[in-house]
Length: 74
Image (cartoon, rainbow, N blue to C red):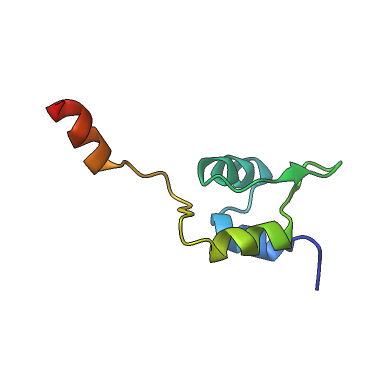
């Protein structure tokens, strides 16, 4: 098993072929990564799998409407 997700897995995860867009998408969905010397994003497989198994983790940004109602209603 590889330490990092493969280039194809990152392409499938982000939906993008271009490295810049892959990095932007990883930033948007809060997946930690670092770039290799060629600029390709490297995502630790173990970290990604742990995040996927976390029931509280949501890759897409979300709005907590109940919290907003509490603030609005005082």
